[in-house]
Length: 158
Image 1 (spheres, rainbow, N blue to C red):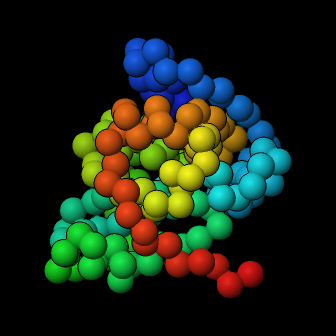
Image 2: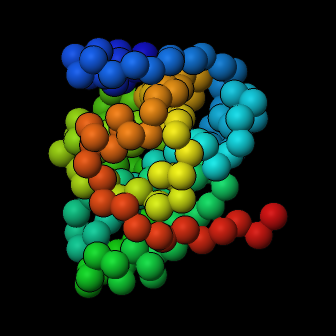
């Protein structure tokens, strides 16, 4: 529950309106969407990647995967790969594993946002646990986090 307080405190300090929601435990972004009764394209999934040896956040809608090739190309990186949970757990000591919010600025990490997430006025994301989410305006998120936005989604074959 610590991270929920951290995100909420930050949003309160910035005078940003948001809704804090609590739902049954959901481990994937698609499960969060189902629990919240909203389209998966509105739920931001935070994926941790290693870009030339450094951690970064790639934020995509729940309905897609990160296209590592597109990310590498856009960033002009030598090497990029998905980080495994053991590597990054210590970075987010105040979060449940895999439930970190896309506020990389709170952890000193760059944030890359898939362009399609910018199309909805609202964004929904995990708030440090598998039960808590924050709903807020995308424009407020973008103003606070200052992510680099480009297209790097690999659409799930459903």
